[in-house]
Length: 113
Image (cartoon, rainbow, N blue to C red; front, top):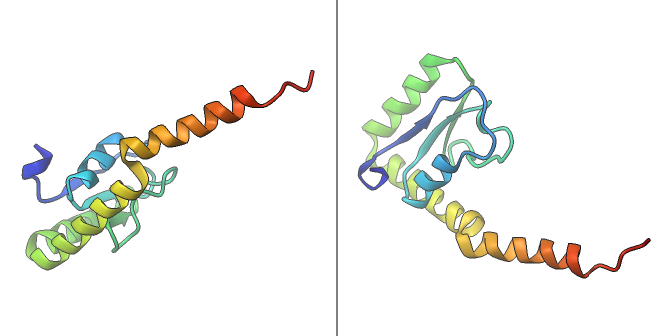
């Protein structure tokens, strides 16, 4: 479904690391996310790879939706930046590399007891 989407909106009040946002970004879909859903990961850089609006501010959400649906150029630019961010920071191989670093640090560090 994301492949056919023009915009992804996550209006949640609370989120941790929202995988759905990363999935949308990995398909080159620009994201509109509430500031409360974006607080942990900082996935969305406002006006760079999507839009961040204040939770509950429906006029702002509506305005960002209108902007993205009315401008193919804006939607394409934000989508390309979203795809780039997803590839650079959230691809599976990068996550695996980070886990390996953690495991090595934890498992190969001599105990101090």
